[in-house]
Amino acid sequence: MAKNLDPDCKQCRREGCKLFLKGERCLTKCAFDKRPTIPGVHATGRKKVSEYGIQLREKNKCRRTYNILEKQFRNYYEKATKSKESTGWALLKMLELRLDNVVYRLNIGSSRTEARQIVNHGHITVNGKKVNIPSYQVKVGDVIAVKPEKQGLEMFSSIKGAKVNTPKWLEFDSNALTGKVLALPERDDIDLDIKEHLIVEYYSR
Image (cartoon, rainbow, N blue to C red; front, top):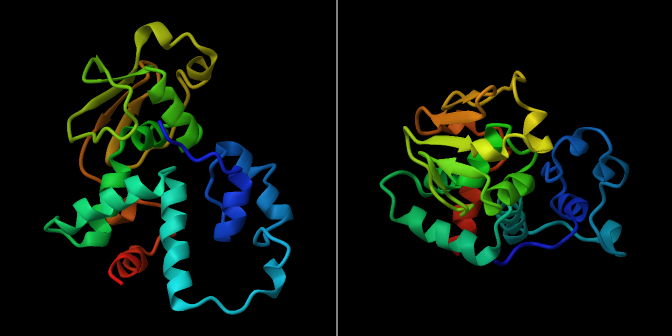
């Protein structure tokens, strides 16, 4: 399975903002705080960013935040254009409903990268059945849980019984390590600084 192997902190520097690719470490020992400049020896001497450049950066910021490669991101956009909702919002909603993102939103993984790995390793079930596909689209009413035989692992035992905050469209029982999709996410539920209209403009060129 293809995945992005670029250094996490370098991706944040390129996009000019924290993408929280390392979870809690981004809140404490973050390289971006010490060196927020764009990578490259000529970073400080670059000219004003064009309109195309602004659109490109917004697209890549969204893509990297959700840990998706270009081809798959483009496929999401193509599906979004066929939606009855606005293309930008339809795109974001599909990204939010990815299983790896939901696992992250439930605080089962400290970052989307870790959540994707947890799903890949077969630690997660959806409605009682093992699902190891990070891009799996969850639906309202789906129950996402850590497999009972895996709950003793250190990564899961550390959050068992802990108080966690989840978006209003999700609920999570930290004692049973079980979450449920209560409703579809709304735009206000996405706490990311993403201007989706710029992504639509980029692909509409």
